[in-house]
Length: 239
Image (cartoon, rainbow, N blue to C red):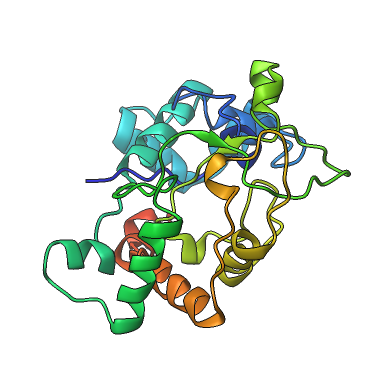
């Protein structure tokens, strides 16, 4: 039902400077603030690991590891990352029921969050300014870096909330470590900008109980069967 690509690179995904799946891994590999590597050196290291030679032979019919095959392998791996078995999904399929707290959180979510985080993907694939105070050390201007348009200043792609319980740190710059901090920001920490999303101009006025219930619902979007699937783990020698 839903295809959730694990974020290779916050630097290049939040402003969507890369829009082709097979090219996507190049940027976090080469980025100075991420792996700070070269494709040539990555290939060289892979060539020195017998397990990967064996895996490339199985996948591509050759044990010669190249950059092209590596990018193809990475893109095919990302395509496999399908998450659709959270408690939320099971409730929709009438296999389970929300607790009272989760249901209240779901009701709050539909009122306060669903305009940007639309079900069932929990994103609308748009770019929004979510009212964060500007970090002067980074001065990340968001989508404007790509479009060079002032109307896109401080706008970033609306991320999916699926599995958000495990995708900390949050926001494009990782400034929040918990879902509680995220909800608190949207409830009372919005900084007004000229490009602020219209949905955030009206305060949410959530109580402490409301925030707890909202977080309880967000945790129902966790698909542990997907997150802890051994097929996606490191290919150990005894696998």
